[in-house]
Length: 226
Image 1 (tube, helix red, strand yellow):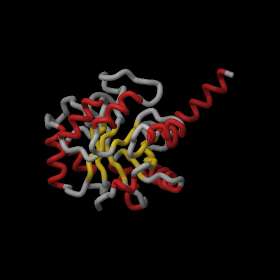
Image 2: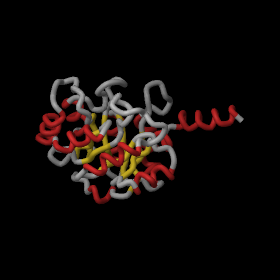
Image 3: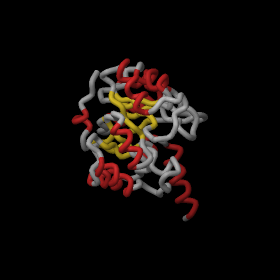
Image 4: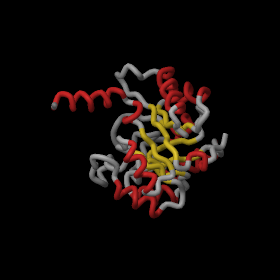
């Protein structure tokens, strides 16, 4: 199914991900979390892991952005062409992958990866998770349908800011001729609104909505410091 990006414009995409060792790392649980986010107004969902994506797709009424994570450093977000094909095969409308200029584990360029993915799944859109404006520019030239600011502050090219990297966001929006999804360290509704005012096509929020361990930690620290 081809997704109409206009349906996501000006909206909130919720990232529903759990991590190894966490009680919520279960496909049925994450599918329910995703359904709850849609009930709250999410126009799209971003999910991780083939089992989670297979559980989510049949029960969701909104577009699904899919990815896998292999490891936790370097190029680890849907890092290879085989990973991209496996994610697309779950039925997601958008495949998110590392969109940086760093070498990929399988030796293929980002552009070759996108081309081969489209050859197999012509209706699937590609979201490039970028760490800088230079990444975004290169990914756009290579055919990405969506540019994400997901990796700003995580690749060593830019410092990691406490909240969203507004400078990077502005730079990516200024150069983009495709939709920009602002993602990364958006922890409040005010920050999400600001992202839209800065030109985001859509805003992706994960931790501040769907990660209770982190949320509890914020409150625990505040209470302890009082």
